[in-house]
Image (cartoon, rainbow, N blue to C red; front, side, top):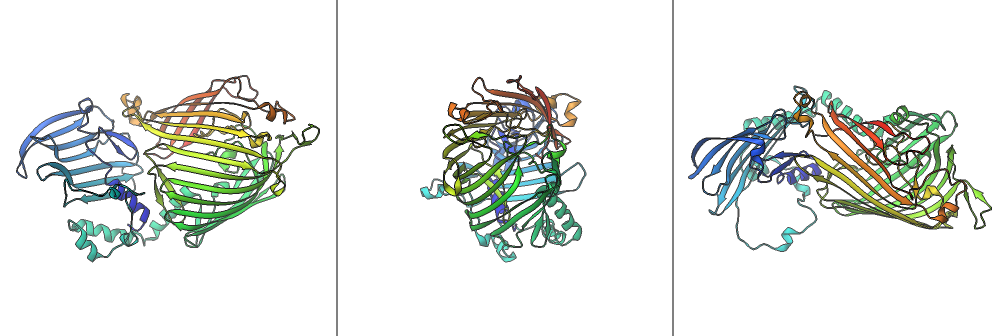
Length: 604
């Protein structure tokens, strides 16, 4: 395995499948263990044989699921007659389990009693058949692990259990020669396994395979690699809005072949209605890669949509243009300069320090008008700000799959905490305001098998100082027909603004708990989902009095904003539809009390 990060991740996975857990987590799904405390609710057991295994009398127990399409296994195990410990187990996921892209998964585990005291796992074999559809193109992953030379009741140093990583990968361990592996392997390779090595090396050189890889990369990253450069993203090449008319954008970035540490990126855009060019350029340089430490800078002069979550399709995405619920007529001309330094202290624990200077000018129907002097006699409609920010994120034991310059988080089993402080500095580069903002957020996934899992996010924030409303908290709305898990899907942009607030997002995924029990519906493998979102906040009289038009938006001082929904996901394995209901502030103008939101998602 030549990718160092994937090597580390696979090494950590050696410990994940524990048959003694009541529920076994496989690809994010909670499978009921055959020896779970609630096993009799899900399995039928048959005593089929008894025999000596290594001079130990054992009973052979076969098991199969009681019902179709539940997350269970079928197989057999040998149980020691005296300790009732598992001597060997051979099991595979049931054929009709509600899991995507896994056509088959088999697990074999063998245990041995060490010093006639403790049962230890001595061998584990895992085989997974991945495929996008049944009988379609896919690949098979195999992993064999063996353990020996156990020592019991020995004194160990405390430092062994400390450290920042579960598994550290040495640079020399990523690729070794055949002589090393002949010496290090507990078992020699079979002829079949040797053929697999040769086959993989051959496939990498096939033009058809390279084309397939390029297409998959283009789909997921939005960029097309040309030598040392990557052109894209393709979904922003053309779009439209009320201010710019038809917008055309061409951008790109340097790729890993240019540099492992340095990346440049930028774009140029043009609007046919405003006849203006927009552009962005920046760089990021890694001072260190393990752990990560980087500096960067960016200049941007573009039309943006404030009050939109980072998860949403940005306004210059063609899908955002095609599936917009309202005209994009409340935009902002933003010119900003930004420099930053970021450092990862441990895996999952990082911070970022940044300085940003920005000039904001409202466009379309948007109006920033505020009084610029204490006497409330002068009015301005643009904002000049300079601010320094400190961001901290802590995700205990978070795992990543890393490329040369980018990486993808595989999540953490623990709550993720984020804190952001922003301070405005009046007079710096002609900045107009002094203010302080503090935002804290905690989110996590709680698994409640067999009823699925719950995602929650709790966030609170406060702004100190008199500032125009774009510098306060503009609660994130969604004016698209696409579902956005990070925003209020029935709230319009700029509808609610606060200088102090607290919010709660809760989404529960039932994972087909109900639909899988309906005979005809279970064939579809649809899954149920329910959500609840709310935010409560207020705005000080000082900030209200700063505004010329106090009726341009609403505050949340009377009652919280609440919306709820239910939906179905895993439609054709990629589609999700949510039926959303707005529960409060139903008399606000230009709002919808009910809406259907769709989204695309790839999950197991």
